[in-house]
Image (cartoon, rainbow, N blue to C red; front, side, top):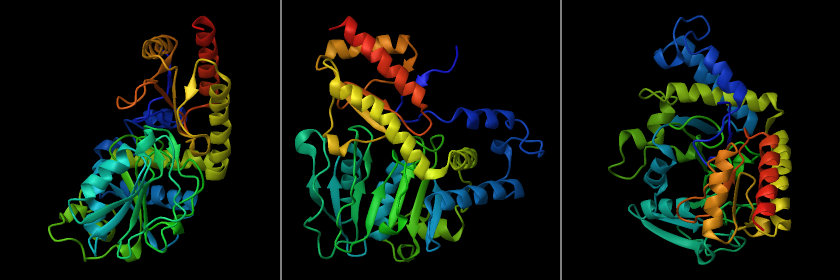
Length: 360
């Protein structure tokens, strides 16, 4: 069987050229006579891999020198605890709840201090981003937390919240490297890489240096202390070597595609094809308020559960994989990350038109 069009929300589609390159190097990486997954993380070869990956990421995102780049493990979910442990000096934080992951982060942080939900879109099944221009930011808040792109619900902040001078912390797992970003507006940007950057098992955290201190909550595990990781250049213990190697290849691929400004244009063009169809379709409907639509995750429904199930089944048979929506919302969802070719979206829309004609 050939390659399918994989619309999975994560682990997700990776650039085919990256997979081919990795396949060629599988048994012998650059004349070392071994695979990257067999070599010491203290070796010269791996040192080059991780340093080059960091340099390319800094270049792509224009990361200032006063920010550390950490390659961590434990998934984005482990950062739900690491963030309050490292940043909660006053034991107060403000969270904006725009979906399941922001909510889980909020619940986890509540174990470590007073956490305020200062805005939420739960009243409408997280189908929009609340107005964040004038929020009741707590005077003694250590940080304000957002999940910037909500994978399950298909929403994305187009304007960052006005944090009134407080440190902004953002989970960018599902919009990582999909468009240019001004790193200086954040204290911490982090994301699991398994959606837009690489294989599951790596979390990249970009942290402003003044937030990396020994002053952490009592009982913080050594491994979850940002200073431990920063002081050791992500090599305090064995890092997820092979995952970092693939991320590095994806960074090179992004540079060859013209960088993040070029990716944003491609992503906008790609998403427009699907959203334009959803806006004119009599059968399919998008579920997100127009101005808050994500370029990465596009949820849609027919309004009929049986028809949704029939669509998912027939789509799978036609080579469109992983279109089932998250179990918490149902319906369908097409995740169209950087590595999804425009052709994949065009073919999907073609299939949806055919399905609509047959089931009108």
